[in-house]
Image (cartoon, rainbow, N blue to C red):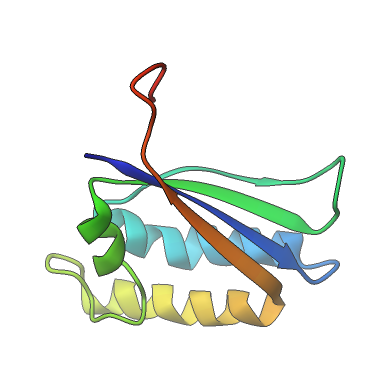
Length: 112
C-alpha cells in the first residue's frame, strides 16, 4: 500500500530559493531514481513564515526507508546521483532551523 510523507521545514529567512534549487537539482533526482514520486513543494504565504511543505509518494514504507540518504544508494540508483542527493540534503540541513515528517496512508475515500 502506498504511503505519503508530509515533511515540513522551518528554514532560515532568505533561503527559500536556494532550498528549492537544492531540492530540484540534487535531492529529487536521486529520490525519483529510487522510485519515489515528488507531489509538490510549497512555502507558506499566509501563516507562520519560512515554512516549507513537501509531499512525496512511496510504494510502501519499506521504499521510504530505503530512500533515506543515510543508507547506501538503493538498487538501480547510480552512486553519483545518490551522492549528489546526499550532498544536497546536507546543504539543505544548513538552511534548516527545524524539520518534521509525518508518514501517512490515504483514506479509502478520495485517495490520490
